[in-house]
Structures are given as C-alpha cells and as structure tokens.
Image (tube, rainbow, N blue to C red):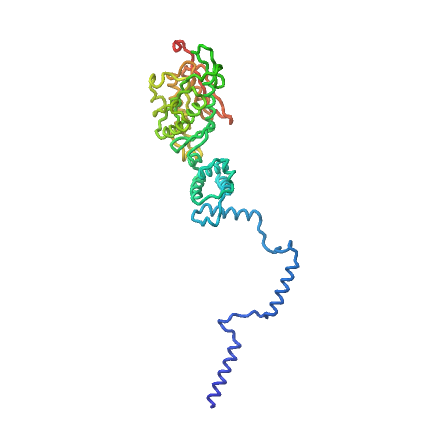
Amino acid sequence: MAKMNANIFIAKDYENETSLRPQKNKPKTNPISSKAKMNVSSVLTKYYENVPLRRRGENKPKQTQFQTQRLSKLFLAFTFLCPGYNLAMQSWTIQKLLNWVTEYLTGKGIDSPRLSAELLLSQVLALKRIELYTQFDKPVDKQQLDRLHDLVKRAGQNEPIAYLVGKTEFYSLELNVTPECMIPRPETELLVERAIEFLRTRPDRNSTMGDTLQKGRISNGARPRTQFVCDLCTGCGCIAVAIAKNYPGARIIATDICDAALAVAAGNIEKHQLKDRITLLCGDLFDPIISGLDVDKFDLIVCNPPYVSTAEYEKLDRNVKDYEPKVALFAGVDGLDIYRRVIEKADQFLKPDAALMLEIGYAQGPAVRELLEQTGAFAEIKSEKDLHNNDRIAIAKKQKRLDMEK
C-alpha cells in the first residue's frame, strides 16, 4: 500500500514538472494572447483603410523607371540569347525583336544598327523591310528565333550583314554576295555613274545621221548604239551589271582571277537577265582576253582593283580585315601594284577617244595621275572626289592618233 502511494506521488510530481518545462517538439507560443492579436490586427486594418491611397507604400523602397527598363531588357536578352529557355513564357513579336536587336547591335558598336536589324529580320522571316512594320505585332516562332539568334550573335562579332543575309544593294539593284567576293561599296556607284554618262553622251564617229546620244536616248528615238566595255576585277559583277542595266547598248567582258567570285557574278548576271550581254572570263586582268576573237578594242575600260597598302591593311576595321578576301583588298606596299599593271597595258585595248576609268584610294589621286601621264597615251586626265571629299575615281581619255583612225 505504501509502495503504491509513493508511485502515485512520483507520477503526479513528474506531470507537474513536465508541464512547467518547455517541450522541445512543441512550438513556442507568442506571449501575446490570441485575443490581443485580434485586437491589434483589427486596429492596424482600420488604420490602413483610413490612410489615403497616395500615402500607402511610402515606406517601401521605390523602383525607378530606369531600373524597371533595365530589368526588362536583361530579361529579354536572357530569353532571346538562351535558346534553351522555355519560349512559351516569352512571346516575341516582330516589333519587340526589331527594337531589341537594334539595341543589341548598337551596344556592340555595329554600323547602321537599325538597318542591320531590319535586314536580319527580313532574311529570317522572308519579308520585305516595309512588311516588318505592316506586320509588327506578328509573333515569331521558335525555329525562326533560333535562326535569328545565330545571325544576331555573328553580327555582334562584326561579321558583315551582307554576308549573313547573302545579298546587298548596289546602284538600286539587289546583288548576291558571298565571302568569296568583296562587298560592293556605295562609293563605287560614282564610277558606275560616270561610266554610264560617258557611254550615253559619247559621239558616234561613224554615224551618218549626226545622231548624238543624250541622256540615254538617240535624238531620233533609235536604240543606243553598241559599245564594248571591259570590266577588270569584276568580283560579284556589280559594275558590269549596273552598266548593262542602265545602258542597253553595252556589250561587256568582265574578268577576275577568282573562280568563286566569278560564280557569284554569274548568278547576278542571270538574276538580272543579262547573260546575252555580259561575258565572264577567268584570268589575271587582260590575260584571258584574246584580241580579235573576244573583241578588237574597247570603248571603255572600268576597274575597281585592290588598292589597300600594307600600312592601311593593318588598320582596317575588323568587319573588313577578318571577313573580306585579302586578294580583293591588298595591293602591295604602296597600294599601287594593280594600277601599274592595268595602266601599262590599257592603251593596247582602247579605241581612239575611248576612256579608262579607275576607282582609287582616298589619297591616291596624285600617284595614279602620275602613272597615267607617264604612258603618254592619254590626252585628258582628271580625278574626282566623292561626297566625303576623298579621291575616288581617275578618268583618262585616250589620245586621238591619225594612224589609229585610218
């Protein structure tokens, strides 16, 4: 009996002790009673409801418009430049892509970033540039995004846009280009313009009707007479195609040392339906031309040769030096190697009163003029500057010689 009472006492004492100690597995309770909590919550709610809307959130850290835009751009950059990202979470429209690619290329220092963005998007979506704006809210699918991603990345590494899209515009003509040929420059259009003017306005010494070509038409309405043109270092054929398209009487022989470049030129000639008026010959300058078989003499020789000197080549922009063919750019220590060879033989291939027209480097006018004068074959020699006031073309008209006119 005494033993039982002792056990009961110990058990009750243990219950009282454990009830007073905090239990390890039992969460601690807030010292504020639940009733007190309800009263405090009610007071805070009523106070917040009475605070004017304009004052709510005054103590919250503010996010500036710049921060918001920056976060948005970072998010767009991540979703676009990470092809593995779940694109269902981010809808890309033409307008959104056009704006983002423009900003991306601007940040990379790429020339004409808006135009470049338009050309890349037009290529990927198979749309004209104007259609990018008429369909600006059109969504772009994942396959097209992946292709655009690759092109934009390469453009950001200074790869020329013309090579990325495989074409460029020259003298209002669309031409195909590849890394095997140099990309036509707008400055070369001055050479084409002067060549067309020369052919259109050159008097016909054999005409019995006294017809004179004026602005591409003969005064009595007849077709322009046939004139033979030689285009040396034709590359993608830009000069030959532009002359043939704008002077229907031109019959052109175009030469180049590079087979791959001539293949591009052949594509452009076919594209503009000029196969019956332009002949391509592979070889070094005049070498592939057989006098009397191909043509006896030319009315005009045009040439945009390599003319970059050793010092200039080292300073070329990355998008030129790293991607365009060196053979189409470099021309020896002083940049005059090809001019010497062309000028030395030009007289043999020109008719009396015919002309030689050369594109020249930005400061090569005096040197090229001296080379032309040394031949004694040209009566009139002049150079012309471009819109940036740099030397751009040299024009030399051949002497009239009695023995050649007989």
